[in-house]
Length: 532
Image (cartoon, rainbow, N blue to C red; front, side, top):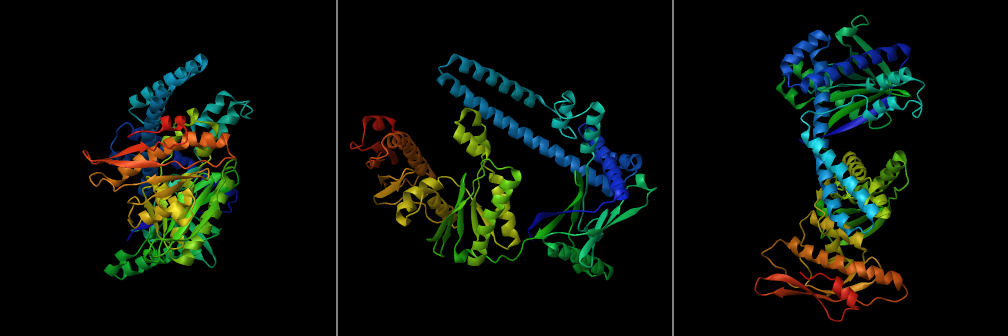
């Protein structure tokens, strides 16, 4: 069965003694991680390091595996980030090289060339890297030692104390379904309405004892999932003692992370939850969602995938801090999941990547930059997925290519939907592979200013992919919209005339030729249209 990792967190009541023990535990394993990182990037063999580290640092094999997994995860994360940074820098350089010749201000050209040189230098340095560079404790805090007064430190010793606390403030303990209670080093038990944790100490701290017990642990939500996981591991243990081979079907790994902040210690428990029995059925229809910078466009369909309900969920994140934004995203996601539970229909999301768009932020206009910077796309997707999974609602993801264009041409006028709601309908229909063929009759296409334009569409070219046709339509609409918006802004009181665009078919190559009707409103508009 498929499974998904879910993490729960809680605070523990740590007295001075427990705080001291956990701090020593964290300091010791953090030191092991830093030394292990140094040895791993030196290409030393992990099996040899394991024997050496267990003896040298007086830790168990499972504690070494926890450190190894944490360090390997950091290295992998750094390498992936490096690839993304290289790709991002290449896109920024390419964008700037195209943009610089268009500037007329000499001072601006000079500054852009300086920026271009800096970007190329960064790219060269990244491409020359052969080993990952990690700063345990964060590079930001490390650099604060050079500006002590500006960052609120009395002296260098004050900074060093904060630095040491920051790099030694957490430790990770990996689990496995084959181990007792899902984790050999740290085990959770249920005591009445609360929980307790038995933590195995490193041999380095043997003077304190072999284990410590942390009591009075509570979780604010989803206690049933944790209890079910504990019972699952206990059942595996009982069946294994009875030599019943069915024990292999039971057991769940539990991973723990202990982290200290200003308020005290927190425990993060990560479980592998199996895919539930979904209460949502595609046969009932779907709920398509189009994610925008300030709202979510939601459309519910029937079993024939025709829209029966639509709404706009506000999602204005501009000017909000992290916690406020997460609260707004959580409320919006809860509304959508609640509707899905009532209708028992799965949710369909689009799969987007804004990384490429964000590379051009410095050259874009201020309004566009604010929109992309404030747009927590990943947070929205993850929150909806998480809430849906817990509510047994299935999630589907589709390629969002040309959904806005298809919705605008085919469904906006037909069902009286806005362009965003029409795109949400296309997203929902695409999950069921519904037809995206262009309509054969004349349709009227609404734009964002409320006007309409007539559009003739022919039979598509079957030798090419359908999206190649929609790509050409997108290019035409984009060219038409730019001067049209300028005209409507200057003459907002006048009703703009519809623009007729006829897509004719070239008999020789059987490809679409796009032309503009002579009855277009102005000469300037004609010049702006693309001829493909």
